[in-house]
Length: 220
Ligand SMILES: [Mg+2]
Image 1 (cartoon, rainbow, N blue to C red):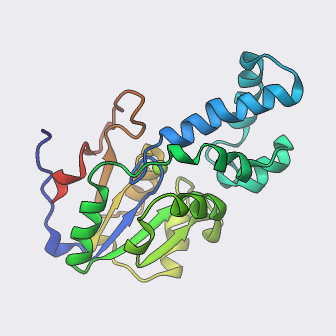
Image 2: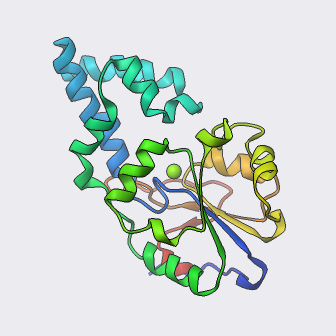
């Protein structure tokens, strides 16, 4: 069992939580983009699966780290495929990580301000909420598509600050992306935590300078 992560909850007012890879298992997303989309792309263009994967990889690399990477409409257009409909075909793989609801309940009981802060496209959020029971825990749901910058991009936190009122010294942010956490660190968000194993079907991640959550009960 993983050690407790010591957090002084009295100092924390606002908790920003990422969705995919943090609250939800990243397996769904990885499987979707790296297996399900290539399978359809191969059929559409009469390619081998390996060739489809190689071609898609080039497409993906062109947009990684930008808002378009997360935009389902962008990908529907780029690939000439109905991405939201394809997403629904594998929706049974969408899973809330273990003990996440216990953690969200705990935060709610402590009357913390709980904000979902995600790069996910609004259509992705809708699909995820339809297949989980986490939506009701959030006081606010903010997607970077409303902000106009991805969470890893410079200026994201300044724009967020213009929109909502929070104190950096009383905020905790949990995210599975190191680039995203580093951008938050630049903005001096006081408490930052990474995720030890964002995709349950893949290995653990070296989270470098960030403490990683292995299990959400470590925070209780
Ligand atoms: Mg994530």
